[in-house]
Image (cartoon, rainbow, N blue to C red; front, side, top):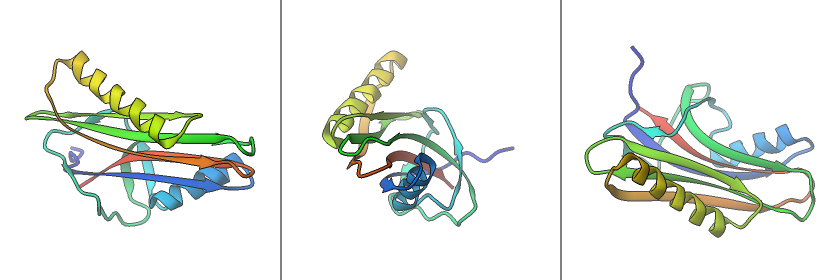
Length: 152
């Protein structure tokens, strides 16, 4: 049986590279998750998972992660990504990701509204929301990433 994650952290990063993939890799490295094997998951936080901002995961670990990212090859363009996690009183939580051509503040506002809508659709009471975003002014080839990293 696969263990259920009991912790989560929110991370963000930005980066530049010679290709979109290299820029994405640089953003992952800045976010502190560039040396993990990310397993992209959808948007449910396991029941009882606790916010752990200093979550330490060894390199190479298969790591469940909900993430959004955006790359751009248009110098001067502003790109942003944000991650939001909503916590309920006594059940599971909801994770939402957003990426777009906007500022960090706009991305954070949008992802917070997405979390709130996710809770309304599920008829769940929303106890707490965690949001973290980042933006980047593209120099050559740029990327942003925002992620909820699930750990044990």
